[in-house]
Image 1: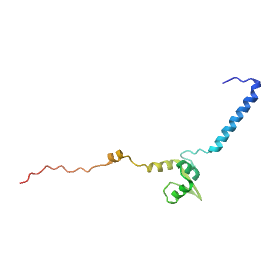
Image 2: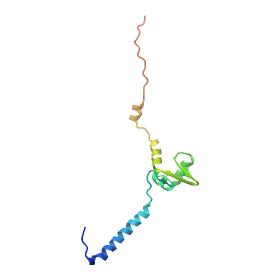
Image 3: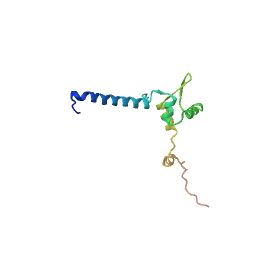
Image 4: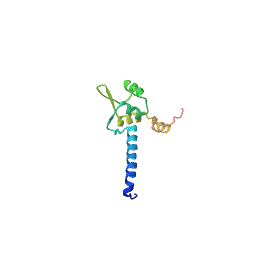
Amino acid sequence: METLTFNQLPEAVTRLLEKVDHIETLLTEHGTHQAGPDQPINIKEAADFLDLAVPTVYSKVSRKEIPVNKQGKRLYFYKSELEEWIRQGRKQTFSELRDSIVLPRLPYSKSRKSK
């Protein structure tokens, strides 16, 4: 950290204020509301999280394909529920499918000789 002289203070304060303004602009543009997994989010935030259009999310809600909470006319989602919903759609790999197949045990029988 550099040491400032009294004469450099006005310029340093100006730079500092510019940086604060820039940070404030970035936060405003990207939204300051960062919901955690247990905080409800609105449909726009859910659509952004799922990388879907808002009408697509409405469609999935109406077909009861996606977990949703409704309070009055408003829809609320939880990121943790949306993440679990995504996980449930996971397809198994070929090796996972192969490993999960349980073959029935055939009874052991000695070969009989014909008489």
